[in-house]
Length: 159
Image (tube, rainbow, N blue to C red; front, side, top):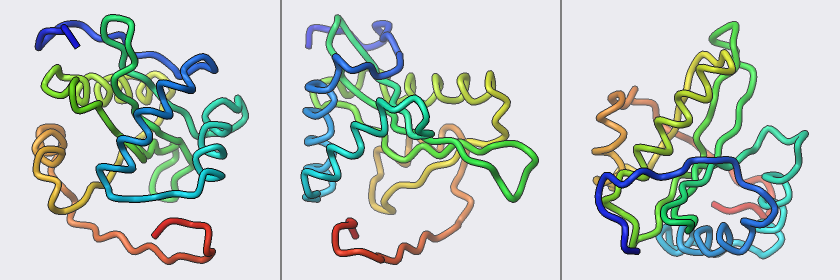
């Protein structure tokens, strides 16, 4: 990439012209999790990201003009607080951009964004064996020991 560790990244909202860059990163994200999704899911995800009425949004990390990471998030009302919560659903940094602090920059950006909008909490989950991600996440807050259960209700939904 040519970027040095600590070089400032630009964190911004995804926009229509980012589709090809986002799709490349999305493919890398799915590959990391050894997952194949139907093309219709990827298309629906991008459409949601671009729909102003959708709560699903993407923040992108850009270094030297290249999109190198994303944080897909959504906010929703909470039953545990009088504010909305923000769910960080997907966080990914391109392999050749790791070590530049982009994961931390994306989370820091989302914390600031959530605070500015009055959202009460930010939460996320990761695979139990994802030691690198867990080291980053543990630097913010320790796991609350919740275990996730997910029931597949349609054939076109990922496990």
